[in-house]
Image 1 (cartoon, one colour):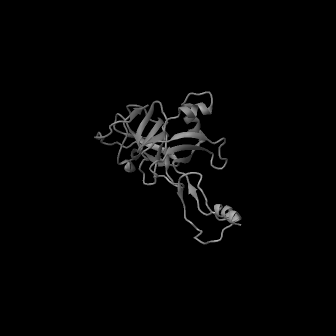
Image 2 (cartoon, one colour; image 1 turned 45 degrees about the vertical axis):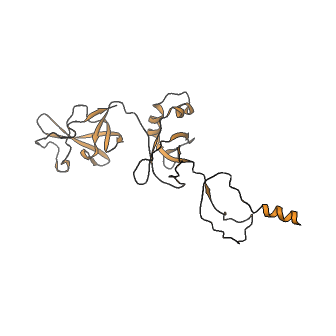
Length: 225
């Protein structure tokens, strides 16, 4: 009897398989529990490393993948640069992560593919369920950098006002291929050396003559590689 009781008593010791953080404890001391209980005793989260899942659209994924050499997707993943996690307070997590998994198919509903990046978490800053944004580098050869504040959107198109030799403005549609901070990366619509209007664009009309003043910050669009 004593031996059987000791064995049964041993079953009451629950040992966590890993170190981590536990959630709330719905069962209090003295509560009756059984193996058939639907509600767990608690939830243990191993957050020494944290997985961050994010999605890329089909075009972005193709462009991202084609920038890196490798005979297979696995080879390309090994050569991918580190990624940055932007936390909910818009600050960057101090340690970079590494992409280590790409889903096998695109989501038919969203048209996007899920990618996973792993981040070290020795300080315990990240927890399960955190939200944020992933920032990853994409090379845009011969792209033009234009401030977003110098653009106007109409009917799902983006425009800038270019300044001609006669100081008349032309409303020019541009092709946006990405963002860099508060700037758009432009592939078509303007070229290196073109002058654009940086402020007061809400009052402009196509063909209007202006008296331009060079900006102290940005006088022209610039070429970025």
